[in-house]
Structure formats: structure tokens, C-alpha cells
Image (cartoon, rainbow, N blue to C red; front, side, top):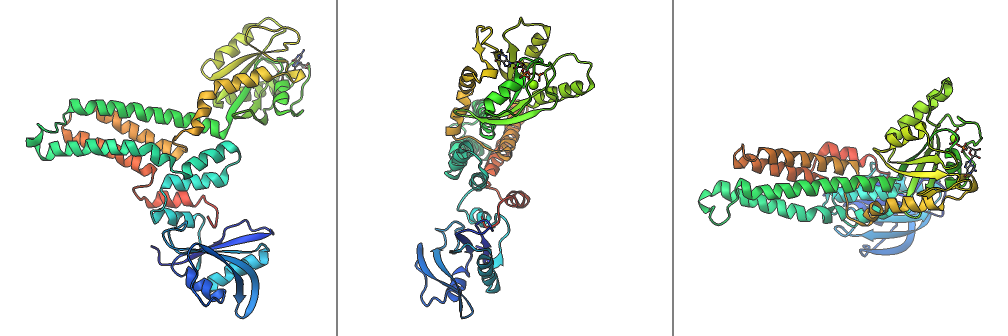
Length: 438
Ligand SMILES: Nc1nc2c(ncn2[C@@H]2O[C@H](COP(=O)(O)OP(=O)(O)OP(=O)(O)O)[C@@H](O)[C@H]2O)c(=O)[nH]1
Ligand SMILES: [Mg+2]
């Protein structure tokens, strides 16, 4: 428990119907009793109607909720004041709390206390921030899973198994005479290491695919000039954003747009048509196209169905091979082919939309699974994977205690995902990205 009592305005500081000022810590109750002129203690987990007084003058009519320690958001005594949402009055109430012994909270400090008081783990705290920053239903859904403890559910069975193996190795190291009962030799440990290696790799792969879907697929439309890339971008976003002409080389700069398909968001980029060009401006555009391709999660390779394929199409198809991609024939009003056919200029792009949803269906399912869900968690899992791999490679060359230490190190790295091991600088770094009052 912390000694000081913190407070903040938790709602956005704009004029609104109501605002919420929060306070957490052991003086929360005495301070509110004084400012609301209450004679009795508040009942935990109730809301009362009353007034906040500035000395003897009634400042505002408010609702006050009181959450008692351990059952509150921070696991400390907490008071929330719902006041009228004028900027002056909200600030004034905050000022009264400060004048009566509370201190202004730092960004994320309420959640930080929830973590340090053991009410939530670090992944849960991250999920709270994810929810605040969620911009669409996929991000909100994944944040809700995180708040519900998805990372703990994911890792707990692994923790149990690793701890069991560590315990058995310990017996072998400390009491070699008992090895008849629980023998833990290199050959017995090896299958565990192999299984963990595989499991860690799957978790990393799933997390990366999940993050791509959750954040929106970085989708680049590529093809030679005049195949209809800009027409396709416009059709997808249902807006005349990119310039379309029958002149080859119309698009030079990257044009961006966003579209929501049935199950995923595409962050689209229309590029300059890739081909040999002497035009200096177009060359720069083509260089930008190539860079966008490198950074893409997904490519839509557009071919002009009304014409025969040529060497330039073949080169673009070769570039796309290393990325997830779909090959699409445009101008089906003139000629259709086997595969996905659209008529971008006429807004006829249903087949493509369906094909994209189908291609990523498995990844979309990950939105309903317990998966690691940010770079910090993935980085720790990757480190743990590295340690397990090394331990596995060295197992027959080193004594048992080296293997033991390797497994222990991997365990600590996984524990760090949930913040089971407290690290000051990590915690500082994490919570400073939070909103004030959260
Ligand atoms: N018949 C037909 N013409 C189309 C279709 N889609 C696009 N076009 C025409 O093809 C020409 C080129 O279209 P754009 O969308 O500018 O092609 P682009 O690939 O962006 O071309 P660059 O920017 O020069 O690389 C225009 O004249 C479009 O009207 C289609 O579905 N059917
Ligand atoms: Mg174009």
C-alpha cells in the first residue's frame, strides 16, 4: 500500500454533461467527508447524492461513489465524484482535493497502483490502455480479452509445466540418491524442451498474425501502369480519391485509403505502376512503390485482363511471390479469366473482397483466441525461445545445473510478460503512455 492519496480528472477536460474526478488512497475517505460535509462514513460500493463545499459555500451538486480497499480498481480506498462537466467546476473540485492533502496522479498511476497492489497483472494493465486506444471493433474485442486475463490463461499451463520440470531437476541435483524415483536426465528433459520450443514458436507466429489483423492489413496495390490500380483503390474506399486517366503513369505518389471488409480492415496504398521509365518523377514514384511493397503485409497484384500478359507483369508477379498476395484480373467487362475477376471502374469488386476475407479467415479467428498481443510480450517470448533453443543445443555437453539455469531463465522471461517480476524502469516506461486519471 502507498502512503499518499492520488487524484485526477478522469474524463476529458472539455465542457460536457458530467465529469468524473477520482481519488485513491488511504485519505480518500476523510477528504471527501470533509469536502462534502458528511457526518457519517460512506457505505462501500454505494453512490450517494450530495454537494461539494468550498469552505461553507456549496460549489456543485454531485454523486459520490465509494469503493472500499481491495475491491476497488486500485485495490485501495477509492472515491469518484460525478460533478457537472464544466471545466471550471471540475478543475475547482480537483483543486479542493489537492488543497486537502491529495496529490495529482501521474498518467496511468491508478492502473499502476492496481498492478503494484496485485489486483491486475502487467498484461491486464496493457489491455486497459489498449481499450482506451481502440479505434475499431477488432481492437476493442482484443482489448476486452486482455482485460479478461487472456495472457494469464495462455501462459499459466506453461508455467505449471516448467515449474514441475524444474522441481524434478532440483531433486536430481540435490538428492542424486533418489533418482530411481524421479529420474530427470538429459534424455528425459529433451522432449520438454522440444515441445516448449514448438509451443513458443506457435505463440510468436500467432501473435504476429493477430497483430497484423488487429492493426489493419497494410495492403499495397501493385501492377504495371494503366491496369486500374487507382480505379480499384477508389472502388474499395467508395470515393474518388486517386486520379484515374487512360494515360500510363498517372499515379506518382503513394495514395492511401482505409476500408473495412467483413472481418478485416485494409490500410490501402495505391502505387505508381511499375515499369521501365525515363521520366524522372515517375522513377521516384516507382522507387516509392518498391519500398511500399517491401513493407506490406499483403499485396493485391493487379493485371489488365483485357490484354495479354507480358514481361512486366511476370516481373511483378515474381516480386509478389515472397509476400502474401492475391492475383486479380481487372477489366472483366472486356475479358474475364480463370481466377479472381473484377471491373474496378464499374465498382464491381465483390469477388476480390470475398477472396481477401477467405484468405485471412484463419488469422481472423485469432481475434477470438488467447494470444500474445503486443511487441513487448512478443519480444520476451522471442528471448525465451532463444534461451530454450540454446539450452537444447547444449544439453548433452553441459551438466544438469546448466540446463536447469537455462530453463529457469526462460521461465523468468515468460513471468515478465505478466510482470510477475517487478522491474522499475519497465514499469515507468509502460505507465507513462497512459492517460491521466486512468
Ligand atoms: N474497361 C475497363 N476499364 C477500366 C477498368 N478499370 C480501370 N479502367 C481504365 O483503365 C485506365 C487506367 O486506370 P487507372 O485506375 O488510372 O490505372 P492505374 O493502374 O492506376 O494506372 P497508373 O496510375 O498510370 O499506374 C483508365 O482509363 C480507367 O478508366 C475496368 O474495370 N474496365
Ligand atoms: Mg494510378
